[in-house]
Every structure is written in C-alpha cells, then in structure tokens.
Length: 70
Image (tube, rainbow, N blue to C red; front, side, top):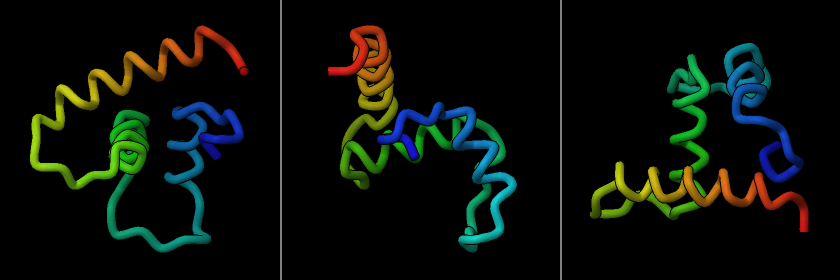
C-alpha cells in the first residue's frame, strides 16, 4: 500500500478496520504504522539507536515526498 502511494494515515485506518489478516499487535494510530513501515524498510531488528534512525528515516521520507515522483 505504501509503495502505491497510500498515506500512512490511510494505512492506519485500514489496519484498524481490516479483518482479512489476523494481527496480534494493535496499530491504533498512524505513528504505530509509521514505526512499523520504518522498521521494515530499515531491516529491523537492529542493535543501535532506533529512535535516531527513525528520525532520519522520517526526514528522508519527507524529502522524497517533496521531490515528487521520479
């Protein structure tokens, strides 16, 4: 969904309402979804400062979004 351009907020709504895939973990807000997407893209689990890595990932995501499609 993210690769198709769906916003993190829209993915969060879908995760909260979908019944197709059982999930043990709640994604009750878009920040939880943002962290999950960052973790997947960054290859977690990593033994490092994850908060700093996620901050850098957010910054890069914003820069990619502002630069538009390639």
